Length: 122
Figure 1: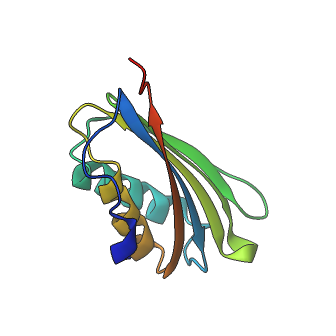
Figure 2: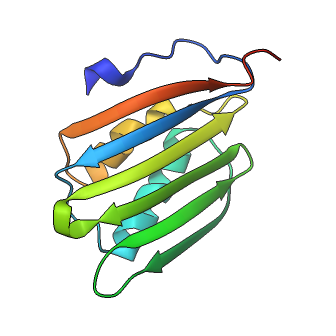
């Protein structure tokens, strides 16, 4: 996980991370996902406004953590051990801190991250 800390300083208005988590566990458990999102928000020094999760039948969870600094969204495929996260944060919040929390919370050592600077021309 040491190779994911690529963003040294904010660029433009914020940083948008696309996170693919492979080989995860607990991806069908809304309580575990809620706890992971709350821990990620704290680690990122962000401000949580609300969390909404929906569990599908027979499996899978989709959801959003609405932040004053923007959002964390997710969709899981527990049967494949896969989760897709979308993290966008502006201001002093650190979206990169979310990566380690998610990897630990879902016991994954295979996490791929793509970073997009948002509002770079502003």
